[in-house]
Length: 351
Length: 268
Image (cartoon, rainbow over all chains, first blue to last red; front, top):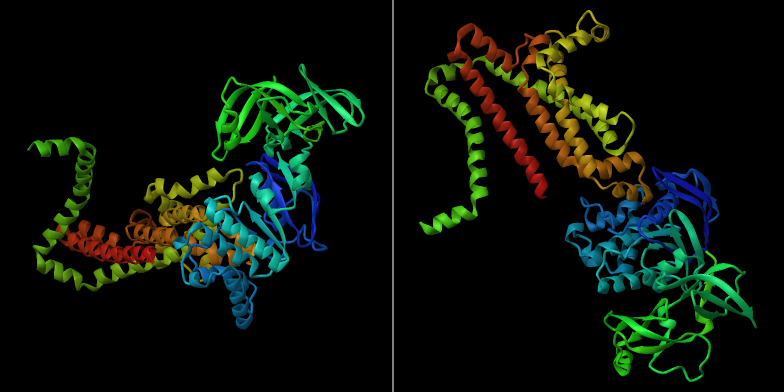
């Protein structure tokens, strides 16, 4: 288990502020944040590479705050894998075992175990420079897990890979996590990757944790504008609570009123609506229910399998439609359409 | 003809740069070649010179003292180079500037400065004297003079080498259980080795060519550059030239061998 208590780190002008986080033993946990938010610094502090100014780090019931990296039992894998270029694949993998003066027989059996697990047999005699991106990442993973660390820290491990290789390595990571029952902390800036890999995540920004929860919670119910934008909510409106009735809240932004199921205190707040929750049609919804609004198409962006359609209520609202749906409706800029979304899709938050 | 004009038009930059490079190359090679050829044209004096024990002794002493200076520089310079490559602190630029001072200072002045520290009448010189190490008119004096003037070449090259080693490789090594010493010896040093070797060769070569600082501290035993000067002063150009030629031949041969070995390592 990783237990971080009020951690503060200062690195020149950058600082991590008051980070508190618990990751259960065997959990696959995601740290999600934009570039420069402090994700890597957090990982390196857990690994003992960056010193912390205050706070504590507990790993599996052990206070490791003052311990050096070589005594923490933590493995780390960087985005560009950081393989030792002067050592062969085999020597890279067994580097940690050599440093720990592992006996030859045990070294051999551990090497064979990890080579079998990741299918690295044919690569053992190769040099890192001759490997593909996916192979390098697998070798880096093998090197990190061969010493049986309690915690595995992954710093954007899929960031530098092409889509196909990325999927392969994702599968390897899942296999490793299940097979070894190891606690994994996976850092990424890619929300889709976070949704695919983890069940719980923490969003980090400007050196502070912004939200911690299940991927579904963060995805559906962001607690701040920062998180909402980062998880690609797209439609974020600033307004006020106009009134409440029967457990629903009426949110007003400009002349537009939206009904939400979220309960918030009175006053100013934000509303967020995910583009995929918006239904678009050329006629009004049959039930004519709440949040069914006339609008005009103001923009269409082709994203391949789907289209991002911007409509003006006003304000502008981004919706997602499949290519097939768009063709059926004959969507074009300037066309009057109706948009509808359920009150449960309108999330209100104060941040 | 039209093709040639078109080719020249397309390759104007390459042509100008090649011509300028050729001028520089000739500037270096012509005096050396002329000296070499004029020596060969007088084989008797040349043969006498290469069999003269004073000449061969001076050349060996030069190579040997430069080697000892390089080893001492290696021992003292590598830790400093690593420290400068890995740490930022107030006054770092000043320290880096001071390390380059021996390149700027006239070498006779450097010799006098060393004399003020390692001379028999000064504290450090006295302390070493008590241990039986003298720097005036001794091999130790030649070594410290060569060390002083040539150490920047090694420190700067090694520093650049360490800077090129990705710091994350060292971080990964630490998480894999390597101590700071192990990380240095197993990761940083081998990866910076090419630059360290290159800097060592340059330091050694610079040591061999040293004259000014050495002659202030040590006239006897004579290193080859001092012997060239002495023969020129005492017997004239004809007797100084063969010694210089021999020194150049030996230095260039050793330099080529070392460079080739370093380059071969690069390809492995």
